[in-house]
Length: 139
Image (cartoon, rainbow, N blue to C red; front, top):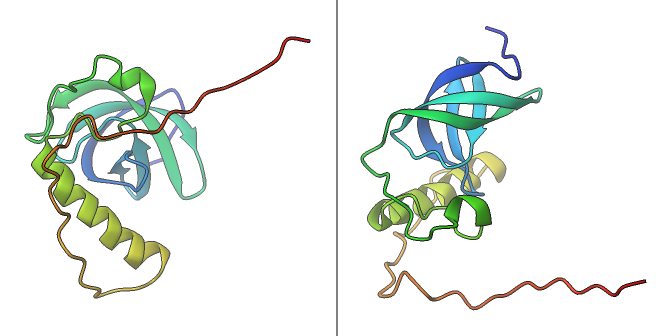
């Protein structure tokens, strides 16, 4: 099958990549899809095709994952500051551990490393304290 930009495909989300994008496959092509959740079946529109992967966007959730929740923040889909807020917290911990394992195996070539479970935070909300401001002067 040859992927085409602008065309829609049905994709089962299998995992999460290190930047928080969901990962699925269309035949042998890896597709990165923002806001997908492992276990979702989605319709995705392909926006970019590279030699070894493609990028798409969700046009419709066909079957939502059991891990999918409504994001707590009303600007979640616009902001980009919290990549996993649409996934329930216990599943986030599991997926974060898997991201580390996959990164070690696929990027570093290190296999069979024991990765410890991600420690649960007693306060998973309101802990961020970083602000980025843009300053500019008028000419």
